[in-house]
Amino acid sequence: MTKSRLQNRHQGLLITFEGPEGSGKSTLIKSLSDELGARGCEAMLTREPGGTNLGERIRDILLDLSSKEMCAETELLLMEASRAQLVREKILPALEAGLIVLCDRYADASTAYQGFGRGLGDKLVEKYNRFATGGLEPDLTFLCMIPPAEGRARQEIRHTDRLDREDTDFHDRVYEGYQALAASGQPRFVVLDATQPPRKLCEDALSNLAKLEHGLLKFI
Image (cartoon, rainbow, N blue to C red; front, side, top):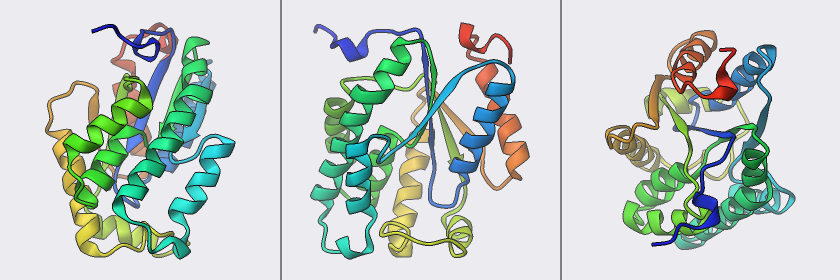
């Protein structure tokens, strides 16, 4: 089978961050970006859903509390639409330019949230993920793992969105999805203990990042 242009190797690095609600991903990404910048490593930060003008509009629909009637299939397709736009408009050009891309959630989020959380199944979601990304996989994925109850307790002090407000059973299934990914044996997954203080979490991420031995990381 001929590989699509999105599957070709590139000069940059795609690093994604996954985890249940309240896992501290956003804080970790910002801290890691600052650490990389201090070492002369340029990084582009982006997020899912969103990351582009079109994607941010889709994000608003997905997370709006008034979208409570949205069915699981619509949710998945909107996630994939945002993802497809982000890959082609932002991520791929950055990788081809030799940049490090730090992405807050990526295709694995749909496996956890729509595949497990919504019960659509990981095999179905995998097919849509592959179509949306063109086969572009992360070089490294940090799984920031925290028990759902602890993560949701952190969320209570913040404004919540439609997904935040799902019931306990939903968030438990999402966590099971991330556990399944962690146990999949794929070498790109690195599990981080997200119950740690933010500084320690960042140190652990930097240590694992250095193991990639990529030219862009020579100063780490």
